[in-house]
Image (cartoon, rainbow, N blue to C red; front, side, top):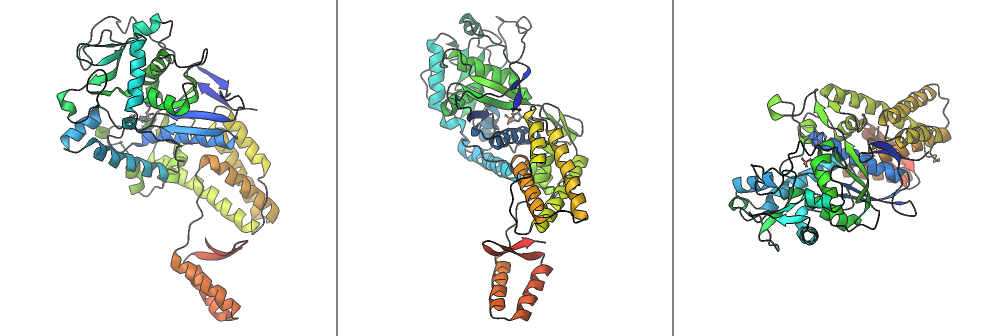
Amino acid sequence: MALSLHNTISRKVEPFIPFDPTGKKVGMYCCGPTVHDFAHIGNFRTFVFADLVRRYLEFRGYQVNHVMNITDVEDKIIRRVREQSTTLAQYTTKYSNAFFEDLKTLNCVAPHHIPKATDYIPEMIDLISRLMERGIAYQAPDQSIYFSIEKYQGCGCQYGQLVKLDFEEMRQGDRVSEDEYEKECVADFALWKARVPDDGEVYWPSPWGEGRPGWHIECSAMSMKLLGTSFDLHLGGEDLAFPHHEDEIAQSEGANLQEEGKPFVKYWLHGAHLLVEGKKMSKSLGNFFTLRDLTDQDYNGREIRQLMISAHYRETFNFTLDGLAGARTALNRINECATKLREAAGNTQANPATEVVEKFTTALDDNLNVSSAWAAVFDWVRDCNRKLVDNSMDPETAASELAAWEHIDTVLGVGVDQEEAPAELIELMEERTKARKAKDFSRADAIREELTSKGWTIEDTAEGPRLKRL
Ligand code: AMP
Ligand code: ZN
């Protein structure tokens, strides 16, 4: 079987066939955070989902080029820069660094490229210029540049590919009040926002005057620059499908940079939202959590990650503290089993056992069916434990089962890392080796006991002795 994924654009689960003629290389873009504050656990559900997709593609042998942007200029950020009398760079660096730390806590693999919007202003200006040349964009009286849906449709392009739109409802042709009051039609969106006094020092020069880019153009410019004008996968939370992703399609295809017949993006994947205790997260309801709020309560990143990937990405997920306690129990079961397998395997090495890996792969091939994938893992834990209890597992089998888990965990990313022993204990271990060589066995035994009392044991490996957690 091959991998199939649900494509928002076709509303179907489709076989995954990348553009690359060799079928190996995959370009993948996930909209990253807007760094106006610490990201919340809802945001992280989406980023952990992207990490799962990337890891699974690699597990299936694809060579992934994973891009995730950082939106480091937008209304909220500008407001806070002004309120705190700081600079844009200073303000956003703090929150993007926090975001990278949080990604590490959740054991997400770093994307290959993490472009910051403010580093790609020339590319955004080029793209807007192209849309101006094609007559799809226009400058409004306030000097801002807007994308004209009507002109885009006039070129034979379709607006409303990801979502079905009711243009009557959107009152095409009406003028709107509020923020973008100068645009011609309500559905039009800003590509370039002319500088206003409240922007302070946050502005760039452009052929249309000083200003800053709109949010949608950022992702079109950065994704096409780093992955080419047509690429395989674009991900984000479900709220981004409209208008953000629809507008990305309009801008990117409106610029007409793709080869004949090729779309901007082949597969659109959207992750459903996370609720907390059954409700949309909100500060006033007291159910709003950043990752740090949870790690401060002594939950670790792997437990939070396990809970986030325990449900299918297209299902709304109800995050609860009880669920986190369940994740802890589930991971303890797996870790205990892996520890026993390690003991039974000793120094024996083996290829991964195939049965559990095949079940796991079949499950995830089916549009990332994590529930069946976890079921395969827990059935395997039960089987292994049974064989380990009655001592019917030989070192070869144990090594092979352990290798299977390690292979599977390259996707799940929840296994415990082999912990590094503190330097003073490593020194003690080396002293013991010397004592044994000098035939001072009582000293050697005393050291072993001291290490045991500190929770460590000495394991002989091909590279020599090393310390392992008991
Ligand atoms: P933002 O920083 O607001 O641009 O959001 C970053 C990502 O988090 C986007 O892909 C959003 O779709 C996603 N997101 C926002 N809220 C939630 C939520 N409650 N559950 C899952 N994903 C979310
Ligand atoms: Zn985006």
